[in-house]
Image 1 (tube, rainbow, N blue to C red):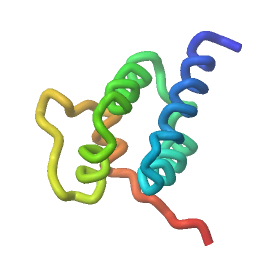
Image 2 (cartoon, rainbow, N blue to C red):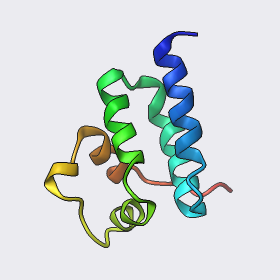
Image 3 (cartoon, helix red, strand yellow):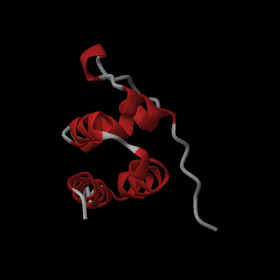
Image 4 (cartoon, rainbow, N blue to C red):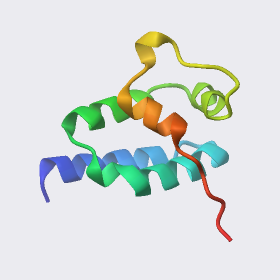
Length: 88
């Protein structure tokens, strides 16, 4: 397994188990849809997103606020534009 694939697996584990159920479900779908295509720079940006407290990220997803300009990145914008689809 390559270094980048190992890193993707670690970030997937970390993003799927944040301890905030609603955010866990959202992040699981997001990572299933996008993580495999992320390059090193995007993985860095995704890791930075994971360092942001859950409640802030959740509020942004729910459109109850916006991240500061210095927190914005391609990956954060992709995450915020992602739409969760509830399982049937």
